[in-house]
Length: 257
Figure 1 (cartoon, rainbow, N blue to C red):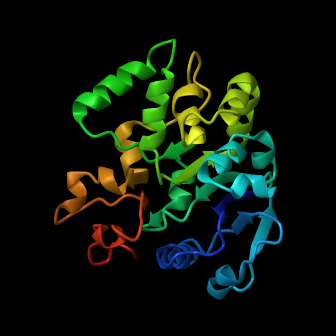
Figure 2 (cartoon, rainbow, N blue to C red; figure 1 turned 120 degrees about the horizontal axis):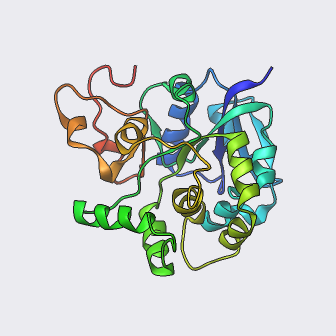
């Protein structure tokens, strides 16, 4: 019988910063009832990871995929990556720039979506409108627009996906996925691919509306005004967390319980 969901934590650099250690420790506590698997390169020194979780499960991929976030993007656009986790229905890919507010993972797996991720950081409502119009164009986005979008996904490192639908989408869009894996013109190419290519011409992935998306996860720079009220509806997780803003997370009494 398949696991419902497994949590995947990429470790590109085992020398974690204090903030990354804090995020790691919290992730292990918050999601401890699910299988947690670390992915990294062979012979990586995981002694810091083991200080937080003694018995760890690790799957190794070639070191070339861990030299940068752009290299990791290529791995996350490969069918073989998702095939490695075929024992599970869903994957929660959780990079160490995200903070789980409360364990709603089971709930989100049962909502019928194939791909959930925090929205990119887009500064103004006018720009959001222009971006939405661009996505509806058959021609897709220009290289410059993809560059901007890729930058807007910086440190947005958490997504939940249905494995079989990710594989089927990559198979149906092999040529486009190949192009995205072999380009260096824009960053976070995996996020750009899933955002604009997966549902072009034909919807391959079931995605939530923007409002539902905001309840799943928000980039810390996109925090909705409602989360600052005295009676907030906090999302499942925040992304974009680093040493400069971690203390700004809008937690309230009982929010992390």
